[in-house]
Length: 435
Image (tube, helix red, strand yellow):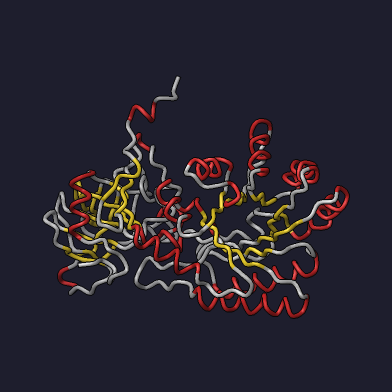
């Protein structure tokens, strides 16, 4: 039986096979889902062309990067090291844009300039970045991209809002005069304008960002031929959540760009930077039940699994919910958030990991409180699978806390083969740089 009504090929038989071959906990990815999501986003409506850049911070595994770029999608990198990893995966620099808070200096700056000469698109995010790269860009006749801070933002939580006054991404609109003064002084041009207001936020705010950004491009950027609306497209992990309607959002963007053309006679290419949209629901964490505990009358009942905040820190960081699939050790699906089960067959329990940290819970709300979930009560050695784990889990996990080792990553290929794409880290690897 498929977990997500034919959305994914992963089922209990695959889970048991992966656990038997690679142990637990492990990340498991479904290649077919990744490919389907890539194809879907590439059909997003557009007026004069669309370029999709995968936000590799969502999941930077080399195999996934190769699958995604193999579908015709480019790369959005958030650091010089991410650029290096993409290049090491065989991705050409001219398929990568770097949008970063970093200010590369010395050897890093030399490498950055070399990569720019090989086609890397550099997205200037601060006045200091502009001052450091300006003379090089002018000398080599390179047109830059610029990220603007619009003063408005939207996200599923305050920590995922990247456009309001409490975030510092991009050059704020009040610094535009200084930016243009410097650019005009040395003769720099901006061929692309980029605004990203947050992740998983209100679609209405995404539409307002489009209007705002196009207004700025018309007023200030006569040389811009590309407009990037960022990423942050909402992807539902839980059955109660609603995904962003990419067709509706794409049509709105397309219509506005077409109006821009009719007014200015300038045809703009649209860029977007999805990460979660492509890989979130392609990923699972397979964990094993180690223990069960309770805290008495008026307390709570707990399921302890061998993968908590060290493999998925999103509940701790954001209060995010992920679907649970409870599977018996012999492969029977006992409960799923995507199936209705009689309440008398379910128990109110909190799923936690093994870290010495009260926040090591997979059932946290926005305030950091553990809230019990309705699940079939598992026995020791049964399996708890955490869904929606393809994005911002392996790439963001504090996996060496308590000296836990980074867990393996496995992919279910389209032909049904299970392939190891990252080995389990050893304790020796944790310690190898200590002196």
